[in-house]
Length: 165
Ligand code: FES
Ligand code: FES
Image (cartoon, rainbow, N blue to C red; front, side, top):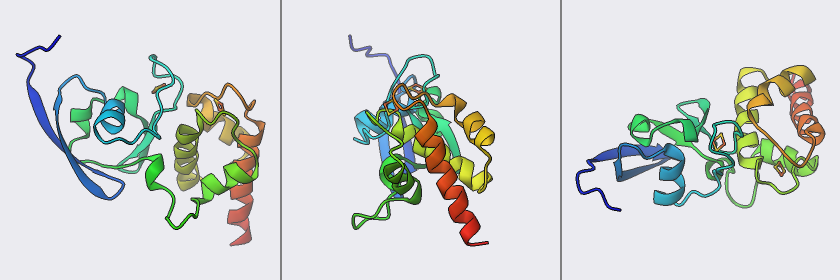
């Protein structure tokens, strides 16, 4: 049912380097704005309890579950989604390449959120231990891989960082 009394709010957000605007209801979640209004369906919805992490995006440099944020709260922010990571020309972002190389995905449903979370971890801590990796990813649920290859992929990036010591 259309609520004629529902006020709409104008929001403008930089998404993957491009300024995007929309007129939205105050109750709309950021994940729905990204997927339904902006067509960025790489950000997934895997639960309705804020637990799975499939919806993780980068908001002003922080990995955030976009189902926990009202879209109006993101007005004026700068957001990177999974679609914004690869540099183009068929090349992958280093975290995407490591997941590919180490078979860190099966169905791929959790993968966009995992990659955004791993990217955040490596920005904060370029050389995490296995336990730091597992701890950091507790907010991202994978039902397929058993996490072992995800941890291996992240460890490969950490050893890559050592190669440049
Ligand atoms: Fe956001 Fe599951 S859809 S945490
Ligand atoms: Fe299927 Fe993680 S690869 S949920």
